[in-house]
Image (cartoon, rainbow, N blue to C red):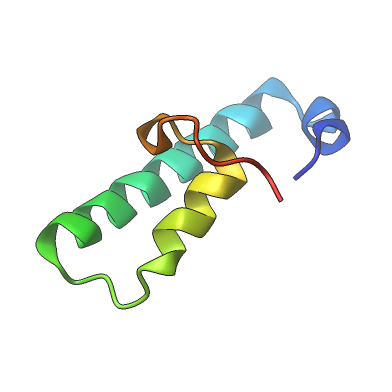
Length: 62
């Protein structure tokens, strides 16, 4: 999702998107902690896509 798409969204849509991303981040962290994550690259792709704080800012968008 690029900046133009974000600018076109309403505040309610942005809050909904943020909520969905937080749920996905929680699910991925939970799977990683419990060892049930089947595709370990999924966490890295997610972090790159949203620049999640748990990624320590090392990853950049591709």
